[in-house]
Image 1: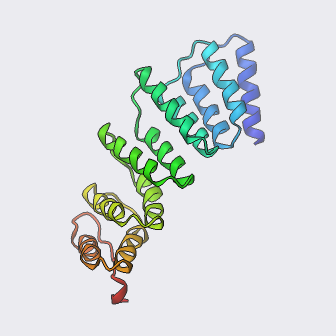
Image 2: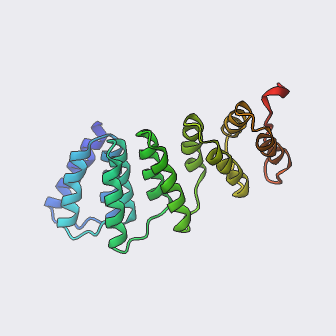
Image 3: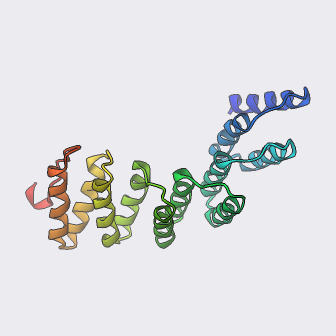
Length: 205
């Protein structure tokens, strides 16, 4: 926390001296403040940035989206997302990930799914982190149709994930007596050409 306070203080001194600061400088400190749950301090800095005619970009908005999500205020994050688009700023995968993570943490399955699909509509490719966030949550909620879809998508996109993540899906499918779908993922794990995943049906253990 001390180094973050020092950075905020130094930024204030630089502003007083009339030094022109760029968005990168503001974004670096905004990221730190939002990440450490110092939302009010981050909002004050956001206001100062705007006053200095430094236009918030997608990285600024992503920091704020993550901050809102960490405060379990993801619905406000959706409003901010719309503001971002209205200002003709193109959201990126981190923008969508922030909303997905927020709704996962709030236990809102349908909204997390919605923003995963919105990501696809916006031609943003989900990352490894997207699946690491969604898969355990979706399985926990018992939505095995979506879990199976996510498992296959990981192979389709040739993502390097921990085998344990895929095994969660396999185990869930077997438990629900959906052996054919589970076996499909096991075979994909063994036959894909970019990385072998030693997945097993529980009955094989």
